[in-house]
Image (cartoon, rainbow, N blue to C red; front, side):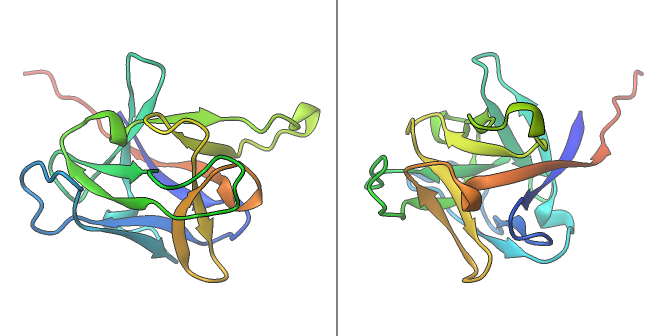
Length: 160
């Protein structure tokens, strides 16, 4: 299983971080705090999960059975209103799933950056504004919605 860090493509050296201290059961609105870090430590490392429905999920390596969660309610497509909620959830459900989206205009100059579209709120994307240290959701995919999914390790299974 691959271990990744999620870095902003535009704001180099800014990584998504997740603190889910004390989260040991399902919380209706999620819990914990998602934010921005300038290094890759335990809270910035995620197991990349390929789901059977074509989505991916990010399980934080620092916490057992805890996933990155995004709630895009109140964020309109192409409305210019950013918001929503990004935090953690115990267990994997619909708000813990994302589509990796390649930019439409990438053509032959595609650099590997992707948008993280919320599977439960189509047309909404994670957004990292590194100059303002803001992490939220936006109704389009542009510069601040682009990320590099960086491989930083791997888990190996051991047969007994």
